[in-house]
Amino acid sequence: MSKKLYRSVSQKMLGGVCAGLANYLDLDISLVRLIFVGIALVTALIPMTIFYFIAWIVIPIEVQSQS
Image 1: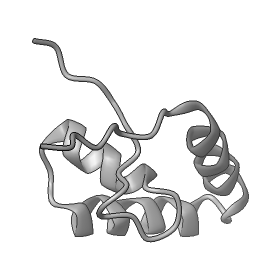
Image 2: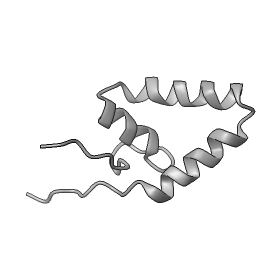
Image 3: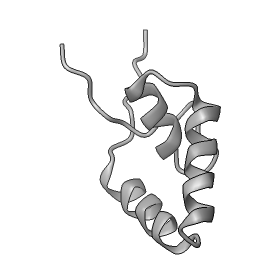
Image 4: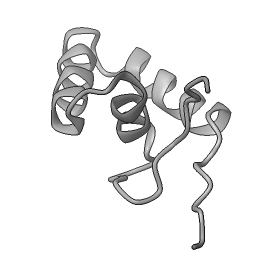
């Protein structure tokens, strides 16, 4: 079974992009958020903000299984 990238619904703060990336890469969510903020500050916010909004649009929402 291959891994798929989804935006997280349960662990999201804004759009679930960082939480989805953390789940996909098997990393801590806080670490991914800190890396994102660090890169955003180094690149003067605009490129990472644009990346985040594009990822928010392109990455599908995870499907919640109802059992």
